[in-house]
Amino acid sequence: MKKNYKIVIGYDGTRYFGWEHQPDQVTIQGKIEDVLAHLSEAPVEVIGAGRTDAGVHAEGMVAHFPLDVDMNVTELQDYMNHYLPDDIVIKEVREASDRFHARYNAIGKTYRYLCYDGVTKPLFDRKYVWTLEQRLDIARMQEAAQYLIGEHDFGSFCKNPQKKKSTVRTVDRIEITRISSRMEQDDTRDYIALTFHGNGFLRNMVRILTGTLVGVGLGEIEPERVKEILEAKNREIAGVTAPARGLCLMSVDYM
Amino acid sequence: MKKNYKIVIGYDGTRYFGWEHQPDQVTIQGKIEDVLAHLSEAPVEVIGAGRTDAGVHAEGMVAHFPLDVDMNVTELQDYMNHYLPDDIVIKEVREASDRFHARYNAIGKTYRYLCYDGVTKPLFDRKYVWTLEQRLDIARMQEAAQYLIGEHDFGSFCKNPQKKKSTVRTVDRIEITRISSRMEQDDTRDYIALTFHGNGFLRNMVRILTGTLVGVGLGEIEPERVKEILEAKNREIAGVTAPARGLCLMSVDYM
Image 1 (spheres, each protein chain N blue to C red):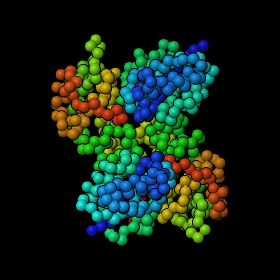
Image 2 (cartoon, chains in turn purple, green):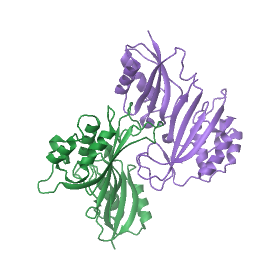
Image 3 (tube, rainbow over the protein chains, first blue to last red):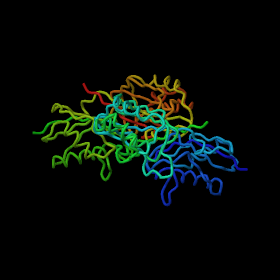
Image 4 (cartoon, rainbow over the protein chains, first blue to last red):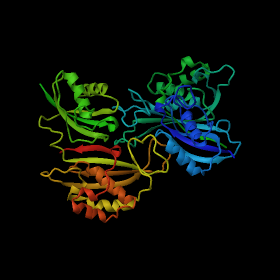
């Protein structure tokens, strides 16, 4: 009999065309489905909590799938990790209720965006950060972020919004802090982590929010201007879309 | 007129055949010499503080070279970083005395070896750690490390020692500590850093020391056995050679 499984997935998105199936493209969803199809000798559909763009990473993507297999959850996790490539890791496997749906039941998500503004190029983290040529003013960014907290129409921070779909979302937390690297020897706090928590995010929303806040940190955009950008509901006047490589889906919340 | 420059270099050794020139191989020394030769329109010899094996990383390799160029040290550093690939970073450039020699003047080196013994595979750090299937007993490793401190003949921890060359070295510090990952969300302390400081290291010495200490941590070798291994001066009875990917040259000391 088929059971419904909930899994937590980490991946280095560098060499993938995003989470979701694409014809003739290598995707994370596709890789996981291939492994499960091989195990069960039948196609398996894996439903993720959401999509991530090409090049975006995850530490806590959640997905569910039905499967009839003679293994306990630890064996299933070991099997998947054995056959998946090194850059996709199954961190947890649990049996879930038949009604559990990774996308419909998600009530919140946490994303982290990593910037780097040190004097020399980053080395071991170079594929996971947006490297900036100039020092960021964190206090200005924190000030600007306050305008974004709460329930708003985030139309200015969405790529190609669909006409009939709401662009209203609630962002209840944006933290911007300098952190130091563990991999590198020095403790210079040249990394800036922007952590976003909300009930849902539009297409490219975290990357456009980050691009705008970095514009503030570089002195190109005034903090108060962010309020006007939000009210304009116009993608054209917001900042750039930050590169995919700095973004990581950290966790998905369920009831 | 030629000046003598001292540089500090970081590199991700994953795709290199080590530091030193090799015919028909891509090496870090070779990449740096190519950039300097292009700049000065003449061959430049870059002398490193030592060699690192294929796949070994560095955060603080030191080298020197003579150069006659109309640039200050910041411009020279920027030029080199601009033309070097992403996985080699020049962290510092200084004018040095004409007598400064990166290898002959080095009086100490610090290496760090990173192991990982978490439940799931490591993700963002996977190219920089030795992943172990079983939990390491750090206290046992620390006990064993005490036998290695001091001036000893490290012949048991050397690949292909040369008959006429001394295998006596002084290791004055071995620290073994659990650390947590910065890149990953959880704070599980699944990483073990082995930090070695000494006046010099033989070929593969840090990797064989690490392989032996990990053998102790896994319960395969008794801590007291390390004393016998050291006294035997026989590579055959020491532990395995730990993989290159976990090793990083952190810094080189000068007077």
